[in-house]
Image 1 (cartoon, protein in one colour):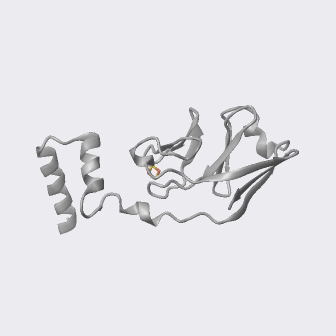
Image 2 (cartoon, protein in one colour):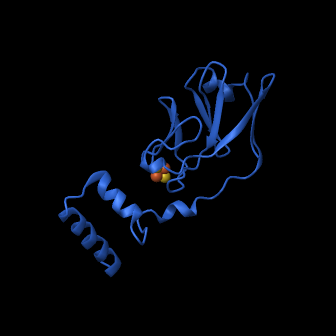
Length: 150
Ligand code: FES
């Protein structure tokens, strides 16, 4: 066991001894002087700019988008059909620790790694999602849907 690991255990035990647990314990770690438990947020790679995805909505590749609530993940984009006439595209890379585990479920974007949740406008809905998520522009011309990052 390294000294640093031993130090974290000691701090954790100390905080628990103060009666802190759950969300309160997490908040202490994330707002502490060293930010040692949340440092990976700063290493999330930004998305490329320009056209990210072009999709013919009549093809089988887009079949998951036929029903409201359906979504596809392609080219680091999560594209969801959020209403009968509206699509929303966000990055597949989570703002929490950069894992590419964003899905669309229960009318929100959700990271299966640690549970970060985001609204359809990209706003964070819980502590792990507090940094929000990048929303891309979606345009439709005929049957062709295009996702761009300007
Ligand atoms: S990487 Fe932690 S919630 Fe997404």
